Length: 111
Ligand code: AMP
Ligand code: ZN
Image (cartoon, rainbow, N blue to C red; front, side):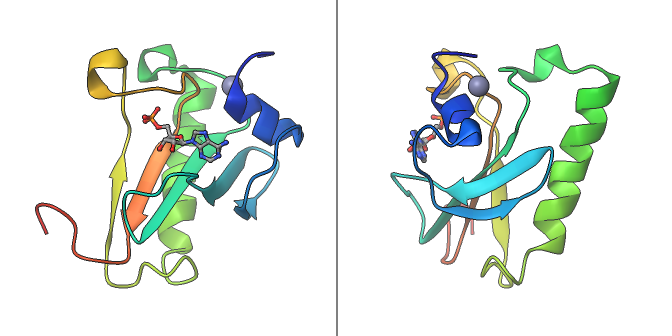
């Protein structure tokens, strides 16, 4: 999508601090962290909402979560982490390209 900031990150048109990349997903540092460790995991394919899942995207979402779990220690999250997916304006979704927030590195609310 032309005006999507995360698509621009995928295409390398704006910089990001990548910590993991493969052919279908990217994990990079959030530009305005709200936790000591705050990463975003995004699919390279543009879609905004969980309501747009189809078979392929559902499987991809599973692989994204599996990848995050497999990188837990490498990402500095061995003491625990939280995954958050904001959906829609009232949930505070500002970027309409699906993303999983990965939060950790300190005691979080509910912790
Ligand atoms: P959300 O509010 O769930 O849509 O989250 C969007 C997140 O994207 C926010 O935490 C922003 O700080 C983050 N963000 C926006 N622009 C960038 C960028 N260029 N690089 C990294 N993170 C970004
Ligand atoms: Zn996008």
